Image 1 (cartoon, rainbow, N blue to C red):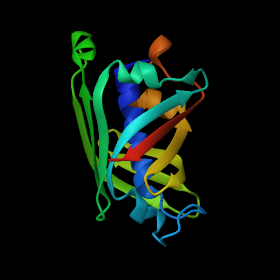
Image 2 (tube, helix red, strand yellow):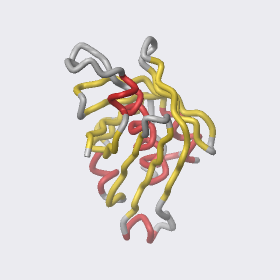
Image 3 (cartoon, helix red, strand yellow):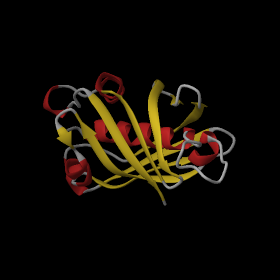
Image 4 (tube, rainbow, N blue to C red):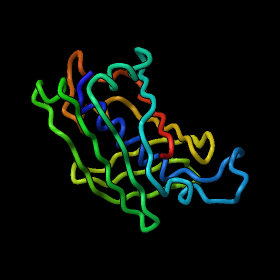
Length: 159
């Protein structure tokens, strides 16, 4: 799995976390958009081939996304020495986001284009976001054995 794929997966997950707010586990009355506001860290990644969390953690020291109440976000990935030895450098991506509570989707508007994700609010401190692998692979320029397959699900946790 490519670092860029992991980065986009993290970005997507973070954005989805920001867009999510109300579901049956949300007892404090916050909207989905309100739940996303804050800083989130990627704690899990899976695709149709299984759990990809270990491969992500072997390349990334930290992957976070910060969502603001004014619908802005910043995604930051701090790659480790292993990734840097492969020519992968740290990434910071700013943008805006839109949460559609009815459809339970979050769309991240980035300089690379719009990335749409389905979301599930597990609780106010944990969100799962998912999208088709082609969305992430194209955005990250991934192919071959570095590309995600099927549906990619990211789990993020509030920091």
